[in-house]
Length: 96
Image (cartoon, rainbow, N blue to C red; front, side, top):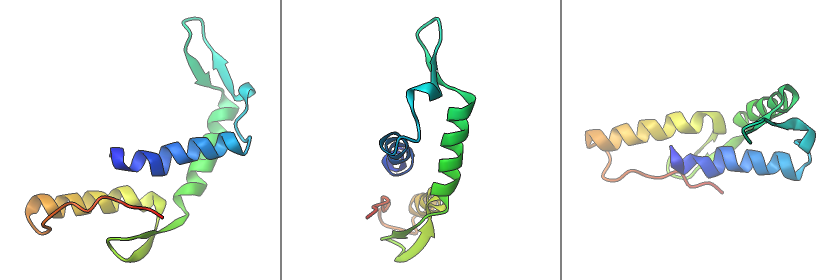
C-alpha cells in the first residue's frame, strides 16, 4: 500500500545511505544503464529490513504498539473492515 512506502521503504533507504551502510561499491551499473545492488548490498538491505520490521511503533488508531512488520497486515484488516461496512472510514496509518 502506497501509504506505507514512506514509513517502510523510503525511511529504510535514506537511513542506510545517511549512516553510510550503503556505499557506491554496493551498486553496479550494467551496460543498458541499469543500476543494481551487488550481493553485499542486497545482504545489507535485507538485514536492515529484517531489523526494521522488529521495531515497535505506536498505531494511533488502534491505540497500541505493534512491530513495523505487522503494520501492512493491520492496515489490510482495517481496510477489509471498512469495505464490509464495520468502519465508517478507512483510518490511514499515521506514524510518529
